[in-house]
Length: 203
Image 1 (cartoon, rainbow, N blue to C red):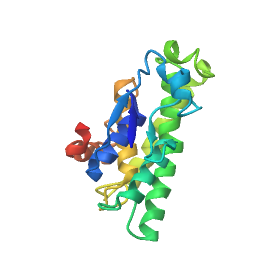
Image 2: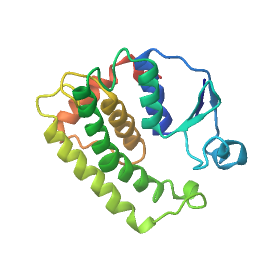
Image 3: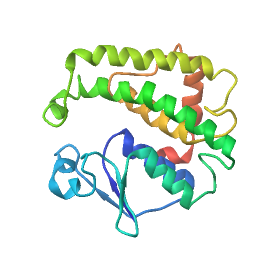
Image 4: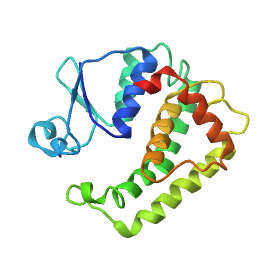
C-alpha cells in the first residue's frame, strides 16, 4: 500500500488513525499548496482531486477519509477504533457522521471561502458571502456537542474512537485558521487536552 499525504486536516486525521492502530504505510507527499493534487497524475488516483488517497496492494485507490479509515479498521481490527460489536460500531459511526456534517464541513468551507480563498477560488466553487455563516454553524454545533460531552471522557464515553480522531483533527485545524475552540466550551476544552496528550497526535 501507499498513502498519498499532504497538509490539511483530512490527511492529518488518517495519519492519526494509523498511529492509533500502530499501522505504518509508505507515503508520498503531494504538494497541495502548488496544486499538484489537481494535476493529471493525482486525478488518476482521485478524480475529485482531493487529499488524501490510499493505494491498495491490488492497485485500487481509495479516497475519502472515513472510507480509508474503515478499510484500515477492517484490515487491522485491533485496537478497535470504530467498534468490536455492531452496537459499538453504530455508536461511533453515528457520532462521526454528526461531527463530519455539522462541524467539519462548515468549518472547512468557512475557511476555504475566507482565509483560504486565494488558494481555493480557482480550484473549487467558492461562496465568500457564506463564510461567516458557515463558521457560525460550526461554532453552534460545537456548543451543542459540548453539552453532549458532559460526564464523558471521549465522544463515545469511555471509548476512544474514530469520532475523536476526526473531531480532534478539525478542532486543531480550526485553531490554526481563525476558528478557535471557545474556552467557554469546558467539556470540549478538557476533551481536547486529553486527546492532545495521546502519542498519535504527533503523527
